Image 1 (tube, rainbow, N blue to C red):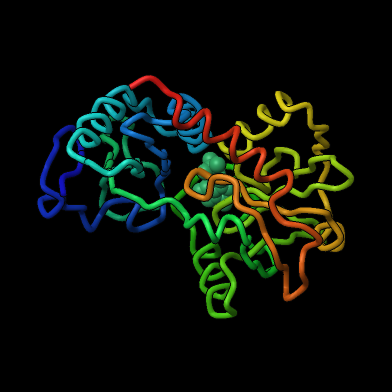
Image 2 (cartoon, protein in one colour):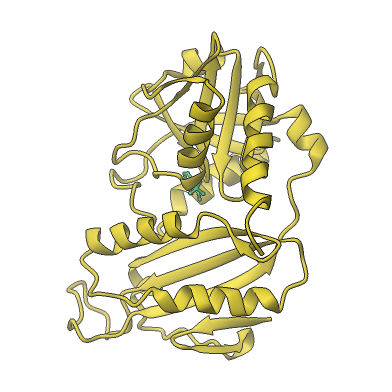
Length: 279
Ligand SMILES: Cc1ncc(COP(=O)(O)O)c(C=O)c1O
C-alpha cells in the first residue's frame, strides 16, 4: 500500500511521523474521510470546504489543499475495488513540545491514504442496526473535525460490548449525533434532524440527504429531539460518509416502530447520486 505524505507518494512503511508531531502529542490535527465510488470522489468539494473551515477555526496557516485531490486520484488508480475510503489528515506540524503554536512557517504534516472498503451488507441495511444512548461528554466544538476522537472511540466500543452497532450521544436530554454519523428521525412523514451548531459535526451526508429529501418532497424539520422522541419515532436512521443511510431497528433494547420505509427511498436516491458521477 502507498500513501501521500508531505508532498510525496511513498510506500506506507516509509511514512515516518515525528515524535514531536503536534497531531501525535496534542491531537492538534484535522481529518476528512471521502467515499470513492468507482474511483470517483463523492462530494469532494463539501469535504474540502469543511476542512478549510476547520483549518480557519484552529488558526492554521494557509495549507495548499489542491494537492490532496491529485494524490487521492493517483492512489485510487492503484485500487481495483469498487468502493474505497480516502483518509486525509493535516496536523499543525512538528516542533519541540510546547502548547504554544509553532512559527507560522512550520509546515503542516499532511497524510492521505486510500483503502478499499466493502459496502455495509444489504441484509444489515434491510434489517437496521441496534444503537445505545450515551452521555455526550465531548468538548463543545465537535463541529470541528479534529482527530480528538477518544470519547467517540469509548462510546463505539461500549456499544459494541453491548451488542450494538453504534452509540448515540445525548446532551442535556437532546440527541446530538452518533460516534461517526448524524441521526435522523421520521415522525408522521416529517424528517427531523438536529440543526447545525457547535454540538454536531456538519455531516456531508446529512447535507446531501437534506437536499434529497427536498427533491423527494419530504417535509424537513431542523429541530433538536429528545431521546423519548427518538424512541417514539416512526423511523430512525444514521447518515455518514461510510454509513451512507443506515436504518436503526432498536434503541437501548426498545424496537423502533418501522425500518426502512423512508430511509430506503433516501438511500436509493443517495446511491443514484454516488454511482452516477462521471468516470
Ligand atoms: C461525529 C460524527 N458525526 C457525523 C458524521 C457524519 O459526517 P459525514 O456525513 O460528513 O461523514 C461523522 C463522520 O465521520 C462523525 O464522525
